[in-house]
Length: 201
Image (cartoon, rainbow, N blue to C red; front, top):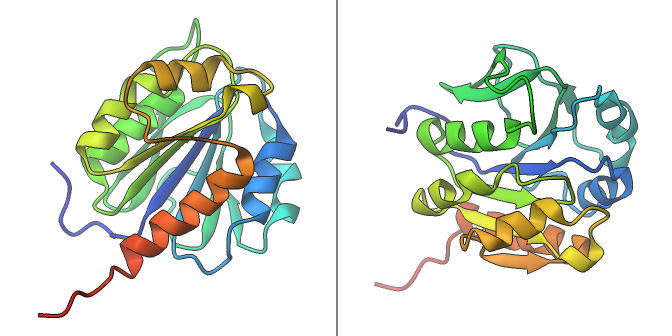
């Protein structure tokens, strides 16, 4: 059950595991700084993913932060998850917990998306980018049932296509797009959520 007192701006999860900094950088550079969304970047590789939090902030003029336990989500911010924790959200704040799956292929993207469906009141946009295995795919049905939007990177544009292909195979992907078109879709979806068309009475 979603907390009705929770903040209601859109949250976009950019999830992958290929450490393709250029793709993430291009996405962030193409998003307006005043779009009114929070962007959460999750790289589920087992090795330290500090390259994201150190290499990507110069790609956007939005404030960027490494996620810490209890950090408040704010619109027009970009957040990076460092390796080593599962990520949850509750009452508008991030919660870090020990990984529930410390061995084998990670599922940190799946865990976070499922937490969003349970505890976030605003629009959800799940973007599955290049990566190994199928993290994120098991949570896409829940995103759809919560009224969210799901996007997968086109496999032929992905450095490692396993993750977007798994997402597409789930049957719960709304859009299959290139990096350029993903940014455009996020803008369009966010604007429709924040500024819905008012029909005449």
